[in-house]
Image (cartoon, rainbow, N blue to C red; front, side):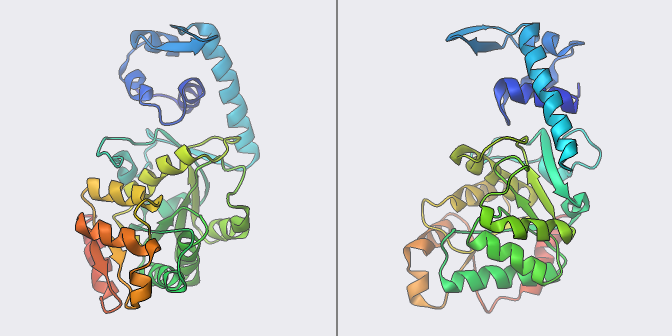
Length: 306
């Protein structure tokens, strides 16, 4: 039984965004949210104790949900539910880096929703790339955008920034997944870039309601969305333990193509910020080299969408 947008936000207030409890509640057939929660035998923590959920808890969460809906509308933030007809199939089939189904129930967005229906490719990497990494991110995003692919990234400094900019420079579309509410932009240095994305028929997306600050967990959680929406992922540069590895692992677990940049310059190729590239090749990634035909690669990736 479908959950309404207000139901989803209410449950998020009770249990957190992305909670697996939403999957349990969705399967129940009670007429009210309280009945459906009761069928799941879910307990809530209050004053240091675990107790059954009562209507008072739901009423408080619903009040907060109403505020979020009102404030989102006031700030031109729209909502897209898993149950909406235009919710893209790619996002319904998301798995996390453990290979477990982990689709979002609700997305907040600013911009042009039609960007979701373009063939997407994620371009990600370290926040501190080398000069060659910066050039590679911009160039590859630009070239794939010219192939009518939408560039997906996370609006972070470094590789993400250059990827978004490359797409915009080609007159293409780009999508940024954010790890916080859309009432703010992090990092603040990319506020202008975020607005440029919106102004050029791109999209800002987040699982998180307004007022939600960024956190390490949120960054990790949103990485599965970048991999999930995209038909393939390109890693520009990453260390062996960089945040980019979460996107890469989710891509491999989903059985999608993962490309990593190979640099001719030995110093760049052997640098610590590129060691993750080599590690990912050992686990199934494909080296992307300057001599590769990006037109052929783009068509191969787009063909996997059929």
